[in-house]
Image 1 (cartoon, one colour):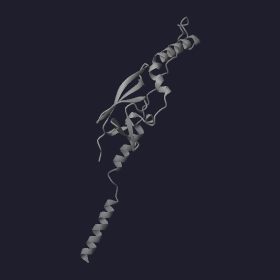
Image 2 (cartoon, helix red, strand yellow):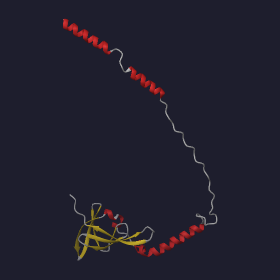
Image 3 (tube, helix red, strand yellow):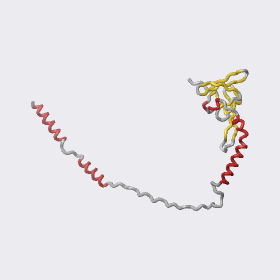
Length: 180
């Protein structure tokens, strides 16, 4: 019994010592003092700049929104259309073929065959296979098939350059390797 009473008395003493005042009261007091002494610093907003209106000094020049300026621009544009129109006019007058509805980058060359002595390209669009012969149209830029070989199809496209003039360029479709 002696050992049990000694153990109980030591346990009660340890619990009473733990419940006494702790040493973190000093830290709590210091934190409260620092919090009360700290003041936020706000930078002042700079004053807005004064607006100074400028007078219009080009009163004698042609007004940019006048009818004369618009007429000059329309004449210039219509003369460009006439000079460039000879290249694209036949393309606009003919009936579009089904493969002209797809951009050229969505068309893939998957093979070629010889049919009636003429080369025919096999192209794949939207998981459908189409036969394309020389002279057929392909892509959205008036692309006309000029040459078909075993590994590529060469097209002549009519596109607008940066100035807006119609020019011809060469595009090719390369044979696509089969992916597994």
